[in-house]
Length: 168
Image 1 (cartoon, rainbow, N blue to C red):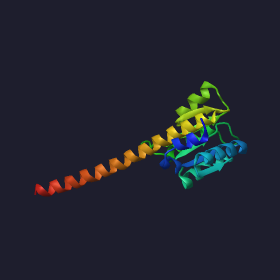
Image 2 (cartoon, rainbow, N blue to C red):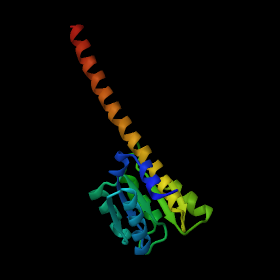
Image 3 (tube, rainbow, N blue to C red):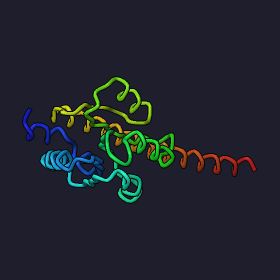
Image 4 (cartoon, helix red, strand yellow):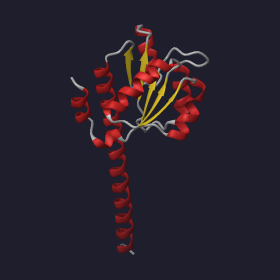
């Protein structure tokens, strides 16, 4: 599948998504950034220092995190644990783990720690795109649902207020 076909598959609202890449290998980051930019993503933050992840998460507020597991100073598992208290339980915030650790234990531990998806390196770029698109689309739909729920709650509250005035 060509980049042009993939680019067409990416809805405009998904192209505006903010993506944070955390990997200790700059070459991996450079490849991902170049690929994502070819697909039309332009809001990308990166770090090779896993210790900066939480502060970047707070300041950048990414829609998706691409996370390596095996890094010095702080593992991807530890990062996932640090992010847990920052993400409300009722919020869908996807993390796609991209790692060279292909063991079933690594996959299970990453998914149990809060990652939404898992790919082993070396990865197929088309599969990376499809998983990114699926995760971002789910996040977008979740956000739309939240907005609709908020509007509905406001309308119900207004209706209750009106009806309580009628009963007086």
